[in-house]
Image (cartoon, rainbow, N blue to C red; front, side, top):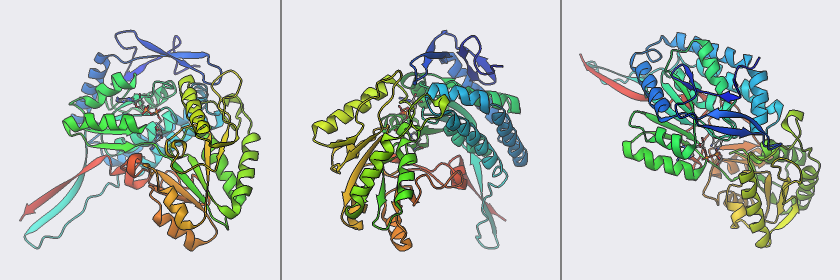
Length: 481
Ligand code: NAD
């Protein structure tokens, strides 16, 4: 049974109603591995946006979620998790086809989304304030209150799990939420609407709208009716949203891009390094904000690491996500062209392409896994986010130099260090300009570990207990006895 697509169309979930939007506009969603159209996605109209805002405001002011007993909110989130898990197969296949990622990764994304609701459901009744001693004549305490309406803008690389990453803590804290889906792969995200409906979330508390960023997205974040913006996406869009947020002074959370570096020290375990390269830059075709897009290698191990990286890249299996290959396509023709343009520019600057460097000659939008060698740290390819399976290898002579190179971009999302020397690992981790540092395994950590950037990678933290406090504000109550 197909729960998500009806008449070849995925609809908007607007204050509890599945809607096509009044203007009957839709976008065709393609399979990036074949270029074929999978289905259409109905675009929300201005009226749908107004209805979503009204539903969110009414549900918030009525106390439908805010005043629910915290333990009941916890149960509600657990029910959402149960309903998401029921959609793993159907939603996972749709996500695989529209995003290009492997079927295994797409299903894992659904499971991760469900886990976010369990994790933050478990915290819903633990948002505890403080008692502040002011002497015998006063009682003073703080409470954490939800913002109200949280407007959340989601990117295409992990649409389901990233939406859940922000939605679950926002609900746990008692907010109403309006999500804007990414236009390149909006289909599977409708699963969250279905799970929310089936779990019995009060109407209006959650809406999921489909629309083009510069149109619907811009209107949502410019609305006078929202109380918070949660944005996950690129730096230029984040900057545009922050300018818009400034007009109404709307608190914002920014989860932006990166150009993250792994540092390979002389004593590193090269098997661990190569395994981390495989996941760090080739998982999801490198379309990961925290991808390992630069690998800094000490001079003594440089040739060995280069040879192993080239071998790894040349032996990756490539294909349709349904067959679970190592390397999947780039999300769109436009994005692939952009990656090729940046590689051509690097070649013109004299940078060595050790392997790859071109698109793969087959249907769909496939980019060859690419290793660039001896990349000058100030070159554009070493400074800009590429968002593809492109690794810049950079040699270094001392750990001080490695740290200096790693920190020498405008980003600061994650970083990594490979060494058996605990003292060196710790000192390097302290010196790295990043919101999270991995030691000996790229993507170590998980749902419970705070994640977010410094510099142009953004501000605020998602994941972990800490993220919950993005979705509340502190009120102090001072009582004279
Ligand atoms: P993007 O900025 O192009 O789009 C992100 C979302 O913003 C989409 O839903 C889009 O429709 C919307 N949007 C576009 N213009 C808008 C506007 N003017 N107002 C409101 N919304 C608008 O990013 P993308 O290409 O979808 O995603 C890739 C980027 O996201 C990369 O830079 C990546 O590093 C970053 N990212 C960051 C994280 C993180 O947690 N830090 C996670 C995933 C992706």
